[in-house]
Image (cartoon, rainbow, N blue to C red; front, side, top):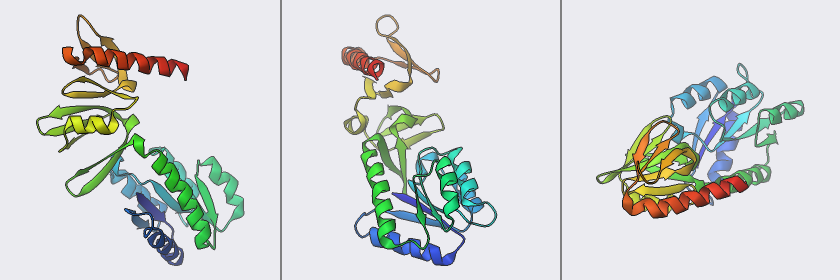
Length: 244
């Protein structure tokens, strides 16, 4: 789990970091970064790969310069998924904060039990969605992608290539292992080399052409050995989508 803390007060940053350190004894694998202004955080944010985006931001509303509300609005323009927790001394900002699609808000001085309650709510939302997130490493860097952002996986010898709209990632994983992890209602295997997100399928030629066309315009071949199962899986997916 990745957490950003953005506040221009050292005292509050130290308190927030202390609370997170305490919670990390129970909820492991928490990484946190500190920023002292909205502009500093946004500049760093835009240098990140989408797969490196944070899960939670603790954001002070009353910062000088670019305040928390303005910072949140800028963040929402390129990250719709992060959970934003506002920290404020000003009750009148609360309504405006909710218009910025915040997750929760905490009123200073923030007590540990209040902080813990909001953190647990956020943690549970993130973990409930974890089966919809694909995690991987490239070198020493950890990445995570929402399933909805993955167009398809491609096998390349001992590696797999993850294709998204923004870029592709090459990892040391077998496609069969990835299929065990993400082969759910949204992904189907059309070839020994391709595992495709059905939400991105534009058109399918099951018989003559034996290929699928993705919304990106890319075409992928359907193998004979996968055709029957893939056809049944996609048909079930379409039926479910029509019922929703």
